[in-house]
Length: 121
Image 1 (tube, one colour):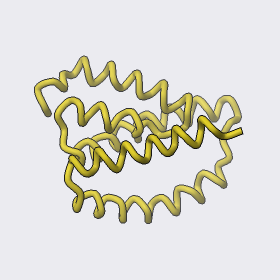
Image 2 (cartoon, rainbow, N blue to C red):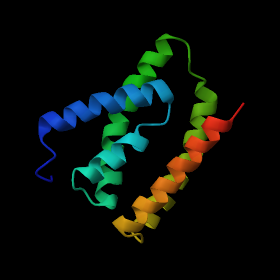
Image 3 (cartoon, rainbow, N blue to C red):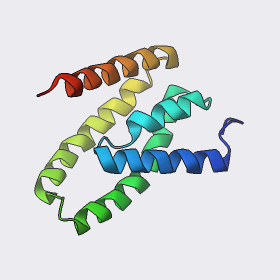
């Protein structure tokens, strides 16, 4: 764990990501990965570490949204089934990308998503 990644700072970032993920449904990775890279993690370690946190956050968010009847389990399970295959492919692809290249790719994806959401009617 990089020196800047103190337990208190990790918990505080976790709270921020939990709110963002539960509110937006973006899974938290859009916040977690850049924060971990900022803290000194390599892109590969940041992505892998974020999935541990996202798993815990997602279970909690699912419980909260289930109580509010905001869950379509059939659609979620079908998306998850495809996601299992995609996750295996993605984990192997990131091993071929440097942290510097990953930052650029991730930034382009976030900018594209931001532009889409901003100009969507």
